[in-house]
Length: 213
Image 1 (cartoon, rainbow, N blue to C red):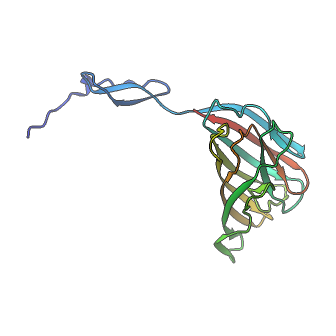
Image 2: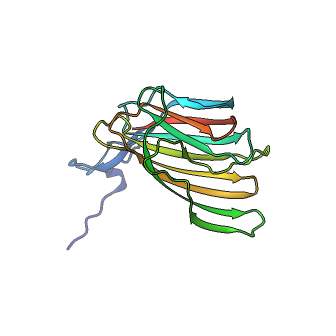
Image 3: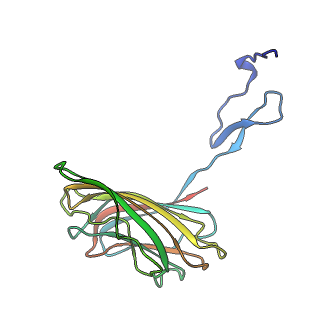
């Protein structure tokens, strides 16, 4: 079997913004016209002694996946939990039924405790708020950050899946890595999402919403 050699100049490898290079039926067998995915900014909320942060617009059938990024969430009250719930009535009620799983990994600053464990932060057919962070400290330098993916919230056929990961200063002396996933057990479209602490306000931090194209 003979090997055919191609000169670099015979291939069109010119990059195109927002496009990927793939095989086609042309003479050079490559084409830079395959569309790639993108994160599309929708909105951003900045907490300032906020009791809740709610997203009541921008969650619709435009995208099949939505991404929330929470950055340096600082609680007013020590050892409080960042939580989330969803709405099917434009934010009039945040009480969607959810079944979820939850586990965590942690390591102490003193290097005297570390583990990966299932944690009783999950829900079983509950309308309660779902915990994302378990006990963020309120020291000046303490906070929690992470992200949550919400899949196809406008479907009226399927339940709505979500996954989340967070990192936090647990009571300021532990590093906690939290993993949460589950589904909203409804075939109604989810059109609003709310974040809050289980006690006190969100003193500072930002939450940004993107659509995944």
